[in-house]
Image (cartoon, rainbow, N blue to C red; front, top):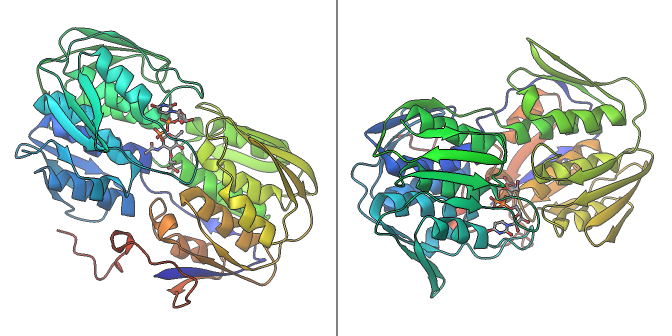
Length: 444
Ligand code: EPZ
């Protein structure tokens, strides 16, 4: 059980590279179930969630090797199970991404329902609606989705929900439709870059998908998909997290491999705050040269401000004089981080899906508890901006989506250390969350 200690008050300065995108790597790894032969993936991030997906695919019979840092070879030819066990699925909601591939591969699937989540209600009704439109028969039994399909067939599928489209739902339907008989049109498809990366991977393997990145995706089913080599796109959420951290500490950083085109709404919001952002061949440069201004943030589906950056923006806006408003139109209850920010001296008022931030007073270091992945990142940002020391506990949440964060922040000049948490306040860390030291980890 580890925790982070952060000595606040140092502006971040220097260069930091981001990893491959977690939310592209996970559905692409799952999609390997429908690809014949070996898939070679590059820029696979070294994360707990990737380790969980690896274990899940291995439990289904896939052979996976991490030949060197950030590359993986996946061979699903020997996959022989279509049952995704609760013990694995409960660790990571993205496990649901194997549902579509298993149906397409075996004509049947049993996938545990993911269970609760700290960021709010996360149904899978749109996943089931989309797969049913392709001809699957799905029912819920003893906490599992039990699905069968003699032959998936193309259809016109509507994936819009009350909060917009569904990212992993679009992934599930796209993979299943890639091997269905006939044409599929997915309307209200998710446009996130991670969904586009999955579509590009499938097309490289022989799929026929068009309209990627738009809300109407057309798919002509093919007989089979063949093994390919694919490089996962850079993680826009990690890049946004570092950009927001630079703003919160009034620093100056360069992110050489940030994809500006994936970050337009985040960049726009930071510029409205007065942050200087320059995109060049060297990468994305983020710097502060004047007092920052308050801003209203509304987290929306892509290309809006990502909900996965909402907590980080809130932490940063606590340091900005004036009144800012933060609303999450995707996950209206995604404010677990607010309670911990209050303990650091933030002045926040919650009104349903909106939190009003009365920023400007200096945050003070405290011992805080992470509750979910992006809330953890928000608490780290608050600690970087606060006076004296902050201790962030339960950082197994952080390790799900950020690789070696303490090393990267230290390289940017911030005194951040990962130390054992022997306190009795630390909850029992689920064994699967234990992040082995890099030296201990066996890369096969
Ligand atoms: C993906 O989750 C991401 N995870 C999340 O990132 C991200 O926050 C989310 O998309 C929104 O961008 C991965 O890609 C692995 P959704 P997903 O289905 O697919 C509602 C992180 O921190 N909805 O797009 O589970 C849902 O309640 C994680 O990296 C339905 O109503 O999210 C929500 O309001 C957290 N019915 C909205 O749609 C459904 O069947 C968006 O959810 C599915 C979703």
